[in-house]
Length: 122
Image 1 (cartoon, rainbow, N blue to C red):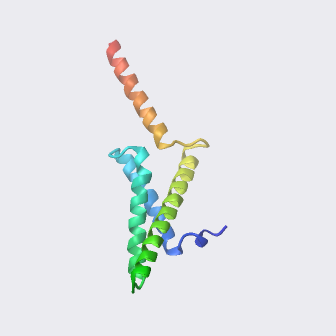
Image 2: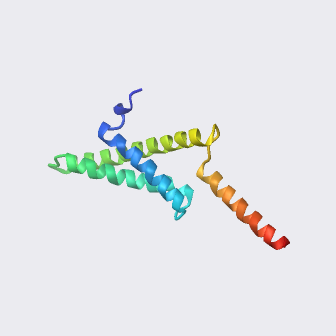
Image 3: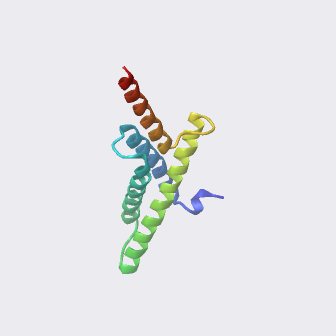
């Protein structure tokens, strides 16, 4: 399977950008881990739309509709690619099981609960 059959070669780099964006947002803790794929999806579609509209000659409604369709489709594919790449690289770093965002949130909540229980005992 050749990836370029589905994703335009120029847009594959967007997957790396989205992976970095997702990891950066996850580290800040501003957004819950469950919403990061939606943020990446919106960013992926927006970046792909910028590329498609900048490189396509639009001469009518059909061309505009095709550019919108291409932008959304490529954005979704690139976001999926970024999600897979981030999960695979995360599993390699963290061992064979890897940590999903939800696991990390559960661990953090467990540590907070343990900390408050320790304070109550003192």
